[in-house]
Amino acid sequence: MRTNHFVFLKSSFRLPTIVLAAVLLLAPGAQAQFYEWSAGALQASKLSTVAFKGWLPERSEPLRGTLMLIPGRHGDGRGMAGDAAWQGLANEIGFAIIACQFADGDPFLYQGDPQGEVSKCINSAAEHLATESKHPELAKAPLAFWGLSAGSNVSECYCSKFPQRVAAFVSSSGTRGPGGLVPGKAEIPMFFAEGAKDKPEWIKDSLKNIEAGTKLHAPWTLAFQKNEGHGTPLSKAAAIQFLKSAVNMRFTPPAAGGATPSIFKSQLPTFSHPSPSTASAPAQLHKIDLQAGWLGDPETYEVASYSNFKGNKAKAIWLPDESTATAWREYLAQ
Image (tube, rainbow, N blue to C red):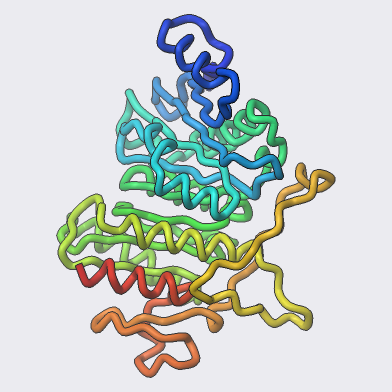
């Protein structure tokens, strides 16, 4: 049985530090953008510490979804909710942020999530942030993921269990990349930052799983960086650009007649927020048209639009747009 008790800092007065945080959040004129809480233990996953920190952009209109930030093995990623780069991304795409901590216990079981306990906990976290922030549209809204190492493994498990809810996923040094394929998973746009100096067995497993998806024409981007090892810290800018473009693509409906409109420009398209009357209904995520994107040569890093690419398209790396193609090329050239 899972212990499921969410303790929000806004309403807890057990510790002086908690009181201080609550006072700062609720001070006159301040925007209560941050929310911290504990989810207790995950018994089946043998984790005793599960905690989250949420952040919302300063806007009154409904939000489109939530960006989940999940650190490496037993790490505390809650500080990422305050990172200006992640906040900038969330503000641009109209998402909230939930930064996670999964720690203290078995180091591997939660990464495989065999009973779906961790994935369900992520859903519960989105629901609790929706309630506490008074943004009910977030309870069932789409999620986007960035995960580092073990956090990538947790994220890909969620993609397997709830593929219809995932707008996009970025993996930084995941030890198995996208993991195994299940129905719907290959429709999720994914970005894989892999360092050539990482453990060979992890690289082998990741590349094998990525290749399985690309054979099915999955909208997946491999960024294989020759000078990085485990962690790929240099990939952050490219990861953020990919999420910007991919999330907006998923929210862009096909044009009349079934053709997918081209949104692949240097400037992001203007998006519309869900209306209050439909805010509680999950948004429809649209399938990506690969031929509307860009391609990159994995050897030379040359990039071009799909129709103008002169290299071997069968071996090329798919990229959502020109901005992501540029970021991909700059990352790999470092």
